[in-house]
Image (cartoon, rainbow, N blue to C red; front, side):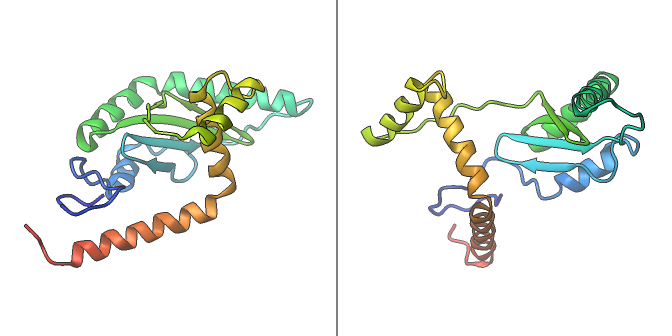
Length: 185
């Protein structure tokens, strides 16, 4: 995020600190023995999400359900064993970057997120869009318009990931070009 740009644009948020160094800072701050490799760090305007890969299980399991239960148990143990340290790291990162910090862990085919934010987002929809949401509610896909909208956004995200990635890269290029341009202040 660029700080101080005064022009028009929909995705900038000038009053939030730059987070370009957050992955490096977290890499240096996290204990070396928590994760296998570097954690996956996802950052938006409100939240920093840290998801790390835990060491593989070594036991034999009767079936996939038993293995999945063991993976979930290992994640629960990690969550409990690291709680105090995660709270302290989150407190420091929240102070430094003015964003909430959320955590998650992955092992095998199991991924669990804990303490993630659910942020309200205001939107204005015309009748055709509201009818889509109402159909999802009436069909039992969602309990409310809010849940229907969240479901639709998640579905679009799954099916448009390549396009969204290209869009984010283009936005980054625009930010870089603006930073090189003249200062209008």
